Image (cartoon, rainbow, N blue to C red; front, top):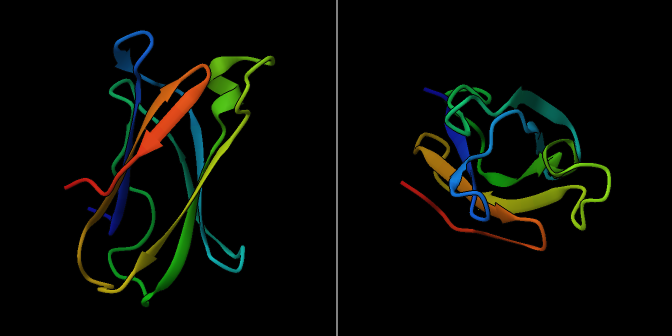
Length: 105
């Protein structure tokens, strides 16, 4: 499993958000990996198994899922990795006019 995984749930529809493109990058914008959420709204193989400590970003193309009139056409989450060998799960709860996130397990 990769060091960083994600899961997107559509809270308005009450189901996983499949088909969302996600880009994973260093805090300086250098790309690491990209993927698309599966039928369960997950990306399990997003990047390497270890990373140097630092700031990283996940950029979710929510407009691809919510449509061209999406209030949030993308969601960018910056987070800090202090232990480059510990698993980091970053879920997103998404609706047409709101989103939230937390460090998952």
